[in-house]
Image (cartoon, rainbow, N blue to C red):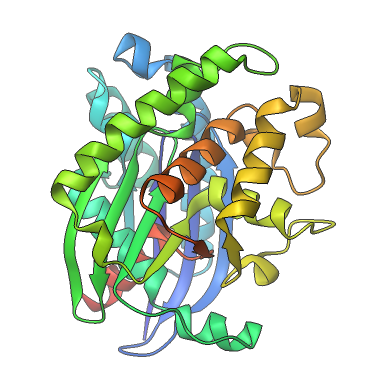
Length: 316
């Protein structure tokens, strides 16, 4: 049994999982945390991480490092993804992490990010289906992880990953590029959708998406859309994990979010404050990819790259 601490630092949020991981079978969560620090603030336009964004991240990372120590984690890994890969001053960020955590971050390429997401997302699908009283989703799985700066597409099955592609569309990146009005205009939405479809053409060139029997969706944009589609009175991870949301319901939620003012989005009971500004773009990515690839439903997973990091850390 390994007590592992996994930290995922993306474009929008930084998250922590401390878990006991056996040599095989399910891992047991001891602590999960998520804070929105918006590390990728402005990076699409400037190519650099803003000093204030690095400082916001440092404050939360110091709390995570202390929590991991207090819980007795014996293996620690921090993975940094899209915003850090893109930044000209990524050395400033890496120096901060080394000073705060005691070890540098692993700034992973898109392919490894995709593989870690796949491992984390698919490890508990059968258990989640059983909790919902439904049949387990069928492989091959197309696992889609919608992040702040990039989205990962991974096709695989119980034997592992067959193909993967990371593309530079994410909820923060698209919002900063296109969705400037409150609510966004028809023209802004059309430009964002054109960006998404262009990226999906890249995905199709490298991933045989038509082979997928089940779409599995990860990360905060997908889980928030699911919570809204399920009409939950408050965010409920247990109700969301393993739920199946039809493409028509994803479209309805997306249309509502893009038509809503910031004030109305913020008032939605399942909405995390850090997602208010970017959830419209995240929902649009999910709906467009389902429509483009003719996928009738999405199986929603609360487990993702964090779980993949912990599992790989403990088991190799």
